[in-house]
Amino acid sequence: MGVLDGRVALITGAGQGVGRGIARALAFEGARVALAGRTAQKVEDTAAQIRAEGGDAHAFTCDVIDPEQIEKLVGDVVEHFGSLSILVNNAQTTVHGQLLDLAEQDYLRGMESGPLATWRLMRACHPHMQGNDGAIVNLGSAAGVRWNPTGYGGYAAAKEAIRVLTRTAACEWAADGIRVNAILPLATSPSLEHWERINPEEAREYIATIPLGRMGDTEKDIGPAVVFLCSENSRYITGHSLPVDGGQVLMR
Image (cartoon, rainbow, N blue to C red; front, side, top):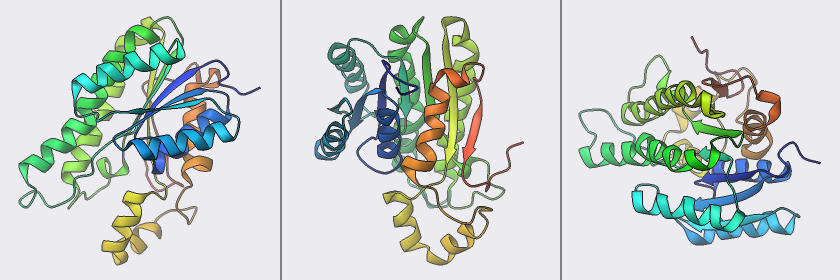
């Protein structure tokens, strides 16, 4: 028996990295998982792996920047599984560069794939989660709370907007029986590995600030935190931002 038996979860950006680890962790605890991503092969491969391990998973192709694709995604998930009670907003285009160098189109893409997509997905899922023990977990980032976000301002702005939406939805939808929380994860992923390759010295210095002394594992470290926030064990927690980062961030 898993703590999420009978629940249906939609995870965006589930074909790789943190999204994939979260999807596997949710499935391990009994959730039936809808895996959404832009690249069909990646989400299909993840779904096949989960099914091979005894889980219930189905892949859906969706670019979260497109509002029509979001509406279709949610409708298709409910049609396939019959219900929807968990949403994990993980998909996000990363935006790096100092403010004077950052192209406006790149900044806008970060906002469209981050807070705008998060808002659209939450709204689309709300009718299905209302009165259904709904749980939403959005992904923030330590970039939004670090003392000096130089070079990451566009990305940090998008992630902080997501945290504001999280808190707002938690307050507005509590009466609807929907809990909304955010995590600030730090784990090995393709995007982080790319950052380590192009900024090796900065990466070494950053990892040295992690009290636990290592990067997290997407499935074994990040996934269980999301499982907790979606389960009955966290039924009195909403509107919270939880760093899952080995102690690197101090939230105030």
